[in-house]
Length: 392
Image 1 (tube, helix red, strand yellow):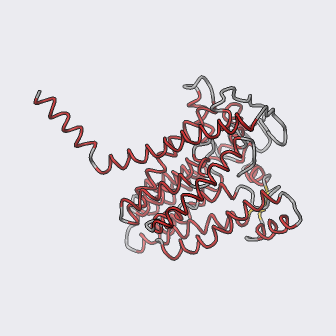
Image 2 (cartoon, one colour):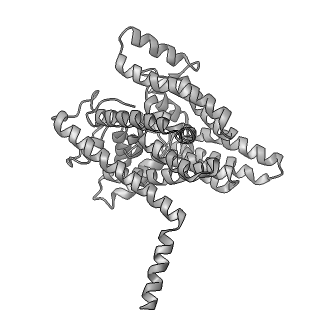
Image 3 (cartoon, one colour):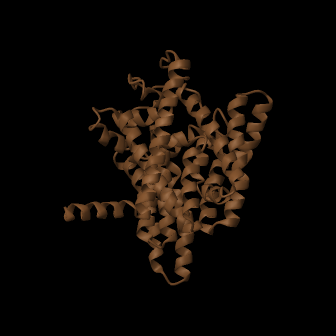
């Protein structure tokens, strides 16, 4: 009996450890939000959806069969079908399939064999796990930078409550890329250079612009070099090697020139002088060209601009360089048919903003305002997504 009681006390002591409590809280948070979104999107689809048959423009399924499961079907939208097509039929499945590196489709293809070859379910599971790991890593980063447990947990809450945070659960690359970006920069801040490089390589193999994470990592490596730490170079070399794998595969595996990747990425728009897409979005709103869509994308973009300045001024410089790098990329994209296409989703990548929000959220009124506005937006945009509305 004494042995049993001792084992129970050991288990209770382990469960009461601060790190275990924090992990449990993050897991509970992610599961709760996932259940709420699943019920909400299913309900919206049942009440407002009706039959939504494939359509080349409005509902492009790219030859993928609509999922018959009513709980999964609301998540089978837009880019999810691109990843499914690549996972099931490879890079020849549609003309612009080379827009994405192979990591996410490969994971979908591999894990689908455990889910009756359902690539949609596999993608949702992958994204869900990556989302939990991302929240855990962001909480660790916030604790490292802000030094308070409540602020650290608040950063995770604010991320998962963001109006477009449902993309972290969808079969999109958002959760894996964000996990890799957060983990890479945190490792660099902790001078774990090989880990910073490995996570940077994951980012490069997940999203086409993922290789740009080498810029903030290069800054961190340069700072370390000045202090006499030469190991920082691994944080640059490894991501660059990872980024090179995709064009090498396209060249030797698919027998296409690496420039085919740029051509595929460019089909969604073109590069222009940074900021011209904002002016073009305003023009299209004034002439009533997709005014609602353009106003939404414009609002998210304009909100990013002051946040980037605040990140640069109030957080370690590596976060400012990361933010400015990706923000400049977003501002240089002239999307089609919306100049600021997908900005409502892309702003999730500006994750240092959630560190600042977590700090400001110690004021009760700021906390309430953020959560009220975010959850209204989260329910609205996820409902739109379930109805095949374009929200990024």
